[in-house]
Image (tube, rainbow, N blue to C red; front, side, top):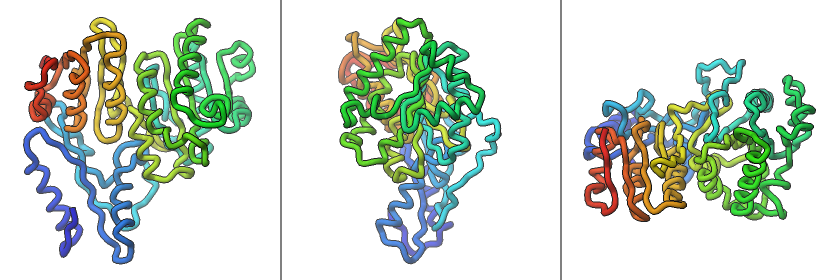
Amino acid sequence: MIISGLRADEALAVVSRLRPATPRGQTFSAVLAEWDGQETADELVRRADEALVPGEGGRPGPGAARQGCHPRGVAPSHSVVGTVNPHPATCHEMGRNVGGLPLLDKVALGDHVCWTIDDDATRMEAIAAFVRAGLLARHKVIYSGDEPEAVLDGLERHGVGTQAALGEGSLRAVTAESSYLAGGVFDPEITMALWRAEIARARAQGHPGIRVVGDMTWASRQIPGAEHLAWYEAQVNTVFMEGYVAGVCAYDRRRFDPLRLRQLSFAHPGAAGTRAPFEPESSLRARRTRNPYGVRLTGEVDLSNRDALRAVIDHLFEGEPAATVEVSGLTFVDTAAARILVDAAADGPVRLVGCSPPLRKLLAFHGADRVAGLTVVYR
């Protein structure tokens, strides 16, 4: 929407009035970018778009507005319409103890996190903490990316006993060329097959889980097949939903175009940043269930992880003709995510169990009661 002849605060008021006027159950995201008088139309649109790029922690930028269904029908406190200034600051202190670097300490088996990082010292210290916790839990720990020897040296400097872990096979550090880029190109199917083989080996070795740190810097180079990375990041969620692997994909924001980084981040259920820890409560967690067969969803689903939800739902019926989707643990769902849940029944009978009253309204808006094969069970 283009608004002319108004000051920024007046335009903001117009956008704000759209929120209560939105039909019941619908949602929208909005940013307001003020033209600086010099930039081109494309530059203005790009700056507005970048306001929705995951910043610290992968959440929408400070100019984002978010609405959807939330416990008690109230949107979270950060869901406000804001203004994008002509030259917004790029560094935002999140008020957390960065010195202690609790950035990845809540990452659990089954989580798939996009970690956007722009500080090498912080990166190394957080990786060391993640690896140390994995070794203490007897997980198989894998680092895959550039300069694995330098990473091993960094782990040693941070007190991780790498030699013993390497010797007993609980720690591996490999290059991207021997994992993501086997054969000299990036092939998503081959890469997922390699991870599944790694999972089988770890299970056979008696590990209760795997922790993976993937340094994705290789994707910023001219690598054949890298254009399929976003698809891969979404599809690999089907591996994580089994609850055996915890994966952190480290993207150096200094190496990637912001819009490209946004696309890649959206394929992940969760996110972290240089100053923003991974928070399960504001992320999506999807876990495969066996009795009943299906998936359990918890946390929040919005623009920042909707692609991940879609990939999970697309693979809902692998192995069974019917499925149950447990949604009682979802605390925020936007209208597009609700549509994905409704569309799940296109491939077979689906039970949506534990729907909150706000989610019920969104499902009704999308015609859930008219979808054959879809059963909605409310709280």
